[in-house]
Image (cartoon, rainbow, N blue to C red; front, top):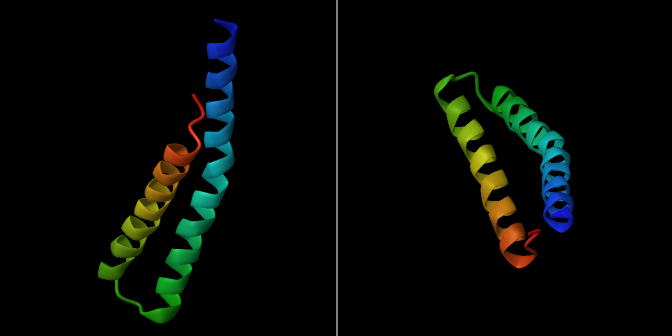
Length: 68
């Protein structure tokens, strides 16, 4: 039971460490879009690409080095 709790806490801590990088990626994408063009349609594309990149990167990392 103690091992499962430690692994769960480690997983939560790792998730919390990823959140700032995801936020920075979203902000950088948003800023790049604002500089490149003033269109509102492309904003959602950048947000979707940033979120997709974070999810794919996380999935790839967890498949190589599983936490649990």
